[in-house]
Length: 341
Image (cartoon, rainbow, N blue to C red):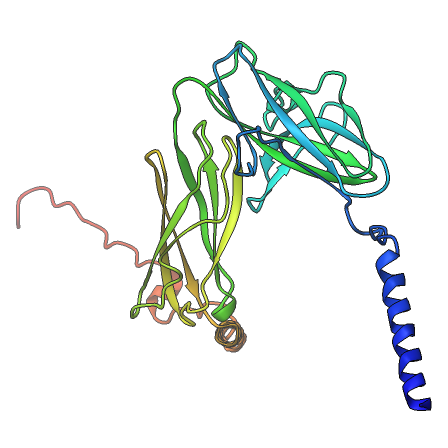
């Protein structure tokens, strides 16, 4: 009986603990959890989630869309909204202009960009109640004199030092041009650390997803080439310049190499550029340099010794014989006159 009583008591304790855990309120979100999200709003009939905004229109038109803000915490959130221009960083990443006077409304060339065309009206600051999803409309007004092509931008939501950006792909109607150039091709480093460095420049008015092909040649033998062809993991925006590198672990240790880069992109964009370099190991370069310096020093010392042993010139010796007294006087000439005796 005591054993049965003990088992019943233990079961009662476990049931009480389970009931307590079930009735306990949900734990608040941790301090490092965002607690809110921002994304393109979907319509009532839409089922797929949009990863970004895509807008298109002619110059002078006003485009409309909606941003969805979801507060997943038990606290009210105050979120500030703005538009921003987009650009490529030096390594090709997508970035937006900071919210500073003059910076948020200007593009890479100093002119007003598509970020300044976005307006939330009176809803630039939105209070989102706990456990609530708010939909905020905004407009994008395309200026009448806007050039055709892609104008990258983003919608930025800020709260408590945290920023969430949603990309805006805007295409203004008109002729489009896909064009790019490859510049500053160079081989850097040696051995397994060798890389092929180059610069891509978007010369057209549409965003490009470039594909790169590399051909490597050597003065002696056939080098183990870098990756032959691949699509670069960047979106090259109009008018932007990015500096990229491709690893070349199979580069020759001692040879003269020549690399040819061919870059293409949808729309007919194509560019070709080459670069060459002597690849010499550091140890061999050091020995060669030391040998040349030693040879130069030896040659200079030998020349110095030869000059040091050369006799100094003395006075010219006096000439012997009649010529010592000067030139021989000429024999006098006698003129004969009259008749012979």
